[in-house]
Image (cartoon, rainbow, N blue to C red; front, side, top):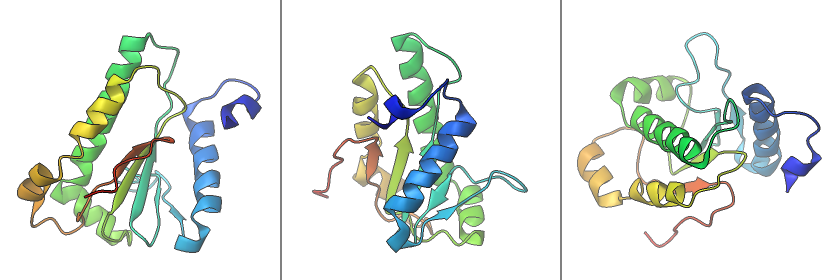
Length: 155
């Protein structure tokens, strides 16, 4: 695991820097673009590719109990997905050149509770999302992945 090579405590800034480096290497053929969170903000994502992959990273601020960590991850996931389905953020993403979103990745250093995977599955309810956001300019299909989870490609 990559985290075993990190010397010292992990904070949000160092986690974001590491994730951006990994995404830049992994998705260089898809022209990965990092979005700095200054002057107008990052619109809820750290970066995107021209193939429609967007990602958001999250590093807990401190050591949480299992229940607290689940609550923070669940709330982060829900808040960020709600941002990406709002007209306000759709406009901002379009201004930054983000293409139609096909996959959204939440990248976290660890999780200890399988409930977060179940929560992610509830966010993949494509029928509900299409009905709710059928005329949304930036969403066609979601493929939610948490770290190394396989996701579901049988849409």
